[in-house]
Image (cartoon, rainbow, N blue to C red):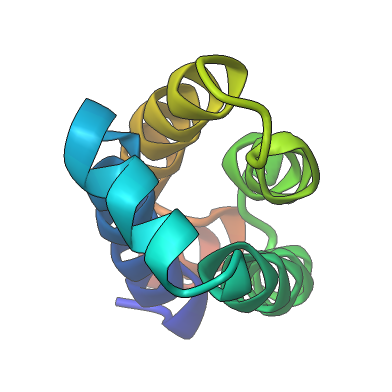
Length: 104
């Protein structure tokens, strides 16, 4: 399993946690929006690694948008849930480079 797929699983799980209506909001507010900054950095790193591994980057791009707009109540929750779903779907699919090397 590539590093980008592992990062997608991790960021997808964290997005799912932040998407839980009361708990996610409490985490973000109690830590003064720091989780959004941390998630932004994680999504950028995941995007770079995904591009390097030849995987799909939709989840990471949506995660970056979510980190920028996640401070809006309601909108943030929906975006966190969508990001989690897309990241986990992308993580379940093999990268193009790893499937090509397995065929050799």
